[in-house]
Image 1 (cartoon, rainbow, N blue to C red):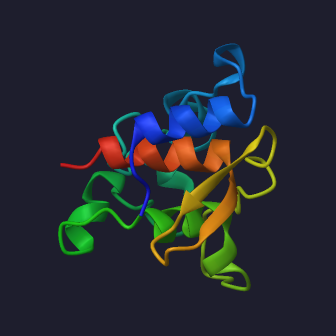
Image 2: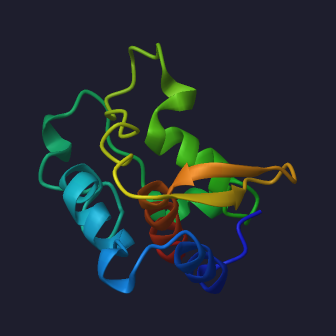
Length: 132
C-alpha cells in the first residue's frame, strides 16, 4: 500500500526528480478531471451535463470501498487499464497523458514494488485528500 507523501518525496529525490520538476496532484486534477468531476470532485463540472453518464462523485471513493481508499484501483481506473474495451465508459484513458515524468516505485498492495508514473501517483494522492 502507498505509504504517504513523505515516502513519495523520498522516492522522487532518490530517482533524481528535483523539487522544481515535482508535479502537483491538484494541478493535474484541474487539467484532466475538473471539467467533468468539478473542482471539488462531486461530479458537477461544466462538461458533466453533456455526458451520456454522470461523472462519479470522487469524494465518495473511500465510502464506496468500505472506508478504505483503494489506491491501486483508483490508479488503474485513471490510467484506463481496468476499463480497456469498456465502450460504456465516458471517461478517457489518461495513461498516456500521465506518462511524462519519472517513474516511482510503489507498493500497490501486493508487496511488489511497481514502477509507476509519478503523475499518476500524485493524482491518486490528491483524490485521496478529497475523501469525505
